[in-house]
Image (cartoon, rainbow over all chains, first blue to last red; front, side, top):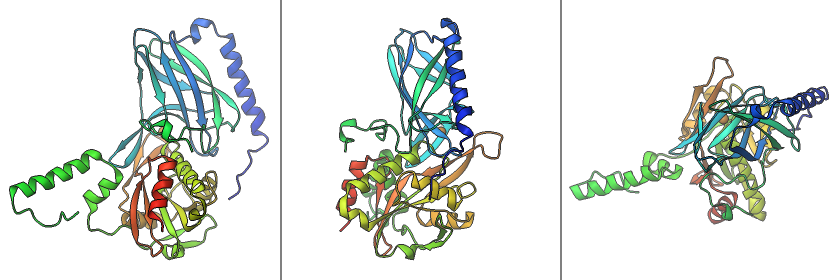
Length: 171
Length: 200
Ligand SMILES: [Cu+2]
C-alpha cells in the first residue's frame, strides 16, 4: 500500500520540459499566444499515479461578443492531453472524447468533475507544482495558462459536481 | 413498490406507467434499481483478491456494513471524486464510521491488478478495501450488484479504452443484506448524513 516515490531521474526531465514550455511561451510573439478574448482561471490537475491519467479542470471566460470554440489542449507535463466529457445517464457514467467545446459569447464555461475535463494521458507532474497548459481555439488562437497540481482529493471544494450547490458542500 | 400485479383497470395501468416514467425521468441510480430490478436481490457472495493478494469473500465483511462501489483506476474524473467524497464522509461521521468498510471493486481487472488497486485506493483513504479478481469473478460480482459495465474503445492502442460503468454506492448490512443505494454524485456531507441515518 506504499506510495512509490517518483524515481529521482524523473525530476530533471520534468523541470526541463516545464522550463522549455515556459521559455517558448515567453519567446513566442504575443499574437501567437493570444486567444483574443478568452482567458483561463482556476486551472488544476488531480494527480493520482504516473501510470493513470490525470483529470484537469478550469474555467474559461469569453469576453467577446462572439462565441469561441476550444479545439485542443497540450502540455509538456501530459504526453497527450485530450478534451473529454463525462456523460451521466441513469446512473451510468461514460467518458467520451470531444473535438470542440463552445465557450458562449460574453460567457463562462466550467470544466469540473463529472462534466468536461482535460484528460492528461501520461502525467509527468507532482502535487504542489504548477504546469503549463496551452489551449487552442478555432481560428488559431492560443492561450497558455498555469495549472496547479493537487493530489487525489483534488482542489479544495472541487468535489461539488456541476449543478451541486456549493454552499452545501463545505464541511 | 408493488408493481408485480397486472393492472386490472386502465387507470391503474396509467398510474403504473406514470410511476415508471417518473422513475425514468428522475434517472437516479436508486430509481434505476427500484424501477428496473424490483424483486431481485442486490449483492451476494463473491470471491475477489485484496491488494495483498489474499482471497476475500463477502463473508469476510460479516458484522460490518459494506459501502460497495464499482469503478476503475484509469477513471480520472468520476471515480476519484466519489472516493474522495466517501473518504470525507467517513471522516466526518465520527465513531460510527468504524462500522463501515468502503469496498472499491474494479470493473477493469485487465489493468487493475490487486497491487494497482491498493496503490490507487491508498491515495484516498486507508479505510478503503480495494478488490480485483479474474474477469469471471468481476462479472459475477457485478451481476450480483446489478452493475452495468462495458469497455469502450477510444483509440488504436491496446490501452486506449475507457470503461462505462454504473456509478452507485450500495450499503450492505452486517448480515450481508442490501440496505439501500446511495447516490455516488452526492456531496460528502449528504453521504455522511445518509449513512448516519441508515446505520444503527
Ligand atoms: Cu476522461
